[in-house]
Image (cartoon, rainbow, N blue to C red; front, side, top):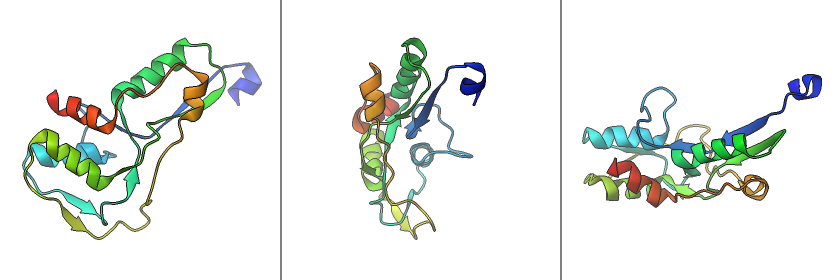
Length: 149
């Protein structure tokens, strides 16, 4: 609206499931930070549903890179998805976190949350096509760095 009325340029970035160091496990926390909180305290981890539901996880360094590029390149009045455009199951996420953290317990399963989305992946092709940005971290690389910090 401001663009149309006042000529203010904009770039809108829609993020997939962002994860990274120092993310809080409380409030509107993502599953990575919730699992990490349980791992740190050697608590029990519960997966809701069968664990095969998928999400698109994007490392915070890739998100900050997208923000920087969209702020510094000549991009006006666009909306982009910032994602890896990759389906990762919650079970795969758990097993990768377990590998890098040394956590030894198995996950327990709970009933699926009512209304939970089975698959969530954002198409980042418009961002890739219109900017010099590309994701640099796979889930495996991001979680390895996450646990090395």
